[in-house]
Image (cartoon, rainbow, N blue to C red):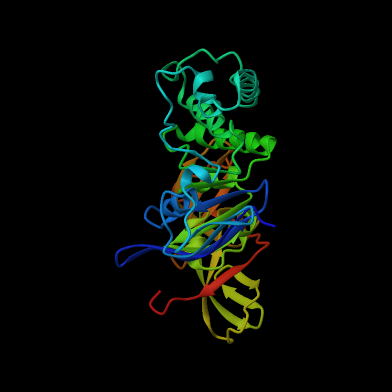
Length: 349
């Protein structure tokens, strides 16, 4: 039985529909993520799960029990759901230990102290218990907020853009650490973010949201390699769309050759757009196919090249950084694609 299940929930502000018949479920111990641009409804979904908002339609179940519907609403404080906010929301006048133990006042002094000590060790802050929030770095404060949310052993943990106040380099590293902590605690959790790197680093399952709906709910690998529509393909990972034509069933002709693909019911002669990721375009000096370097970004171990084909179409290619080519230079390329993803070409595209 899933620990959390949302069935066709909707939420609206007056005539404006924010969440539209949204469904997903999480198994015990699983980490999910709602990923999408600002205004897509992902934080509203989190607030409905937490009990801060009442759903207008549909049902929310936690551990098999109904906690939210249009006619039934379990108050937030009775749901045993923990929450980590993007601003940490730590008590500045309380020590680290007191912050973590704040929700354990009914546990008894000895049991509370033991749980605080256990979590300090788990989040890597052993020995920091008597410090105050202002004495900690942003990453350490976020660990304290996580430990405080985990202390009462919630049935579900919600994380609302928890890394948005941190440096870019720290976000992904801390996301990996948080994942390890949640897995060690066996905690079921949902993350809300607009950052795909955080989502990929932390989540087992990701729901890409747009205009109040989940466009695709899948594992990170499937989202990247098998997007179900152009919005997901554009939002998850970098890539470009190269024009193609179906020349026979299962075969797409593009400028760089013929690619095998599941073309479904599309007719021969139909125009499509083929998704090419940077790792699909390989630099190969021996290739007869040439492209012009029109831009490049140094990333340490590799360059991200923007390449122009003879037709003028642009590609992205990740190339090891010892291949340092100049802007305007022609280089050899070839395609190395395991998963060919194509969508019908828009009428005016």
